[in-house]
Every structure is written in C-alpha cells, then in structure tokens.
Image (cartoon, rainbow, N blue to C red; front, side, top):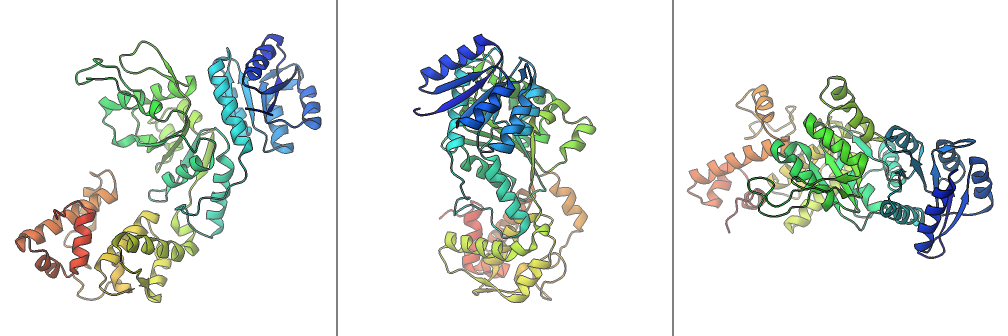
Length: 458
C-alpha cells in the first residue's frame, strides 16, 4: 500500500509479531508496544494510519485507548482485538468510536481486509453529500442528519436507522454507503418483510445445487452478493424469530453457510438496518431477539419526520416537480401560493413519500402550468366543490382495513388506481381519449398514469 504506518498494541509478543509480519507483507510499516501508556506516548510523537489494539492490556484496556483517540485524533481509525466470543466487548468499543473489531484467534485474511478498509477510510477527505443526493433540506434537523451521515460513513459499526414510514431511511443508508470506503462495492437493499419465510435462509445465505426441490444450480445469497460492500436490511423487525437467530450468528461470526453446504464462507459486509416499528417495543414484547437488537443497534440514527422540518417542504416540492417534469419531458409546473401554504401546514403522516404521491397526482391531473390548491386533493376538505375525486364512497375505516392487507400504502393506492383506469378504459371500449374525458383528466395525464402502472400497450 506504500508509506502507511500502523501502531500495534498487545501484551503478547507472539501476537505482536504475527500482526507485524502480516502488515509487512502488505507493504505497511508497523510499530509495536505492549501497554496503554507506551501507546499514548507513540501517538504523541508519531502519525499513524491505523491502530490495532488488544482489549486486555496490563495497565488498562483497549476501550480507554479508543476513547483517547476519539478525543485527541478523531480521524485515526482504531480496531480492537477481542477474545473469541466477547462480542459484547467489541460492541462497547464500536459504540465508543472503534472502526471495527477482530476476534482471536486472528484470521489473517480478515485482518488484511480490515486493514485495507480502515486505511482507506482514514484517507477519505471530508466529503459533502453528492449534488444529486435526494436528502434535501436546509432545516436544522436535516443538517444534523447530514452531519451524522458524513461522520458515520467512515465507521464499520452497524447502524439502526429509525424513523416513520416514508421519511427516506433507505436514502440515508445509501448515502452512508456512498460516502464511506465501501462506495465502489455493492449496496444491497432487501425488504425483510417481502421474502417468503420458507425462502429466507436461501435468500440470505445462498444454497447449493440439489439442496432442496427446485435448487437446480448454486445460488449466492445476499451476504455474498454484498461482499465488500453494504447490506441494508429494511423492515428488519419483520424477520421471524428463527431467522433472527441465524442472522445473529452470521453477523457475529462474519461467515455464512449456504443451504446444503458443508463449509462456511467468510463475508465482509457492513450491516445497516431500518424499520418503521419501535424495535425496543418489539424486543419487550418478545417479537425481536434482544441479542440481535443489541448487535444491530450499535449506533442509532433517527430520521426526522417531515412535520419536524416544515421549512424544507417548499424545497422538496420544487425538487419533486422538477423530477416529474423531466421524466415526462415537459415544462416544470409551479405551485401557487395558497397551494404551497397548505402543503406547509399539512402534517404528512406518510412523510416525504406522501408528498411525492400528492405532487405526482397533482402533476398528472393539472392541465395548466400552475398547480392550485384544489389540484392537491388533500384529505381535509380543501378540494373544490363538486370535484370528482373529493368524496369517497367508502368509509375511511374500510380503506384502512383494506390497506393493511398490502405491503405498503403505495401498493394499495396503485391497486386502486389500476382498477379505476381499467374500468374507465373498458367503459370507453379502450378508447383512451374517451376514457380520459370520462375521468376528467387530460389525455397526457391518462397516458402518464398508464405508463407508470405498466398498463400502456403502445
């Protein structure tokens, strides 16, 4: 790697020698010390690209060194070496700011990968979020979130991203990945609630040919697909308890065994997870394992709901409308002041996703370049009198009950929209111009909706 220097702290001479030889073969210079006091002296007189420290030292422990480095050299990555099975100790170190951990006996291939990733992380300059990043806003809440993303991107600690549905938890996870040393490796996102229970183990860990009916060839699992990169477990609270046990072992051992396989496969992935549920409540009620929660919740990052950053709504609305107009290859419409004021007053229980849905509907229904208050169709009686879409023929409760049968509100609304469009087309004998007229929308609006839902056969 060239011109890199690592400080090794361990009271066992054999371990110091093993680590030093391994680093030397990687082209990395190393200094070795046997205790905490000597390590602090070295850090004062020499610059390092990484520290590797044992947790048990004659005059203290590795956690003290992690805290010392965080206070005095916050950009210096430090990895701790723990006794086999001391996962709680490793988690405490990462909570204090450690980059990652190694278990004894040290696996040299894992060591080399950790050293490479850690040094790359330490060399990363402070980076702003990409100009095309979808995390948009100037509010204090969103700026604090962005600052946290920039800081956490350098670590390898698992992160639990909490927040309500629709706030953009996956966007936050992608941003953490893009700003970190794993940016060039895969980012693999999986909705844990969308995988059939009987296929979960195969999806996560892969399978061997012939291991079960239908396994016609070897298949790599999500851990193998994300090798070297980031695995994002969305809606992790939906995992069944038996799968939680297997996931915990895969994370702790940094290895997986494919279904039907005889040998474990070493993995190198960073785990990020999210759910709209309160994991603490799921643990208390026995639906989520406490040991897995403890392992995933090394660092918790809360994404604020839209109602806590109302000053960002106007900026978000303009961005969404520009995106919609670009996709439709037409001029960007503007929101008039009453419409903008109403958006800024609305509570958005569905957060940014609901704002996107409201503006997409307004964009497709609006025939002019100005979106008015009545075009928004907000669910509080602000629609214009006599508007075709302002009144519901069903009680709100029935919609709530039906929506519960769908994976998300988006899926439910898309299903309703498909039914309405198909019914209108059938009545018009598939004359799109006539169907648009019956629906009270423009032909462009109908065509856009059909394309979006995959119903356009042109």
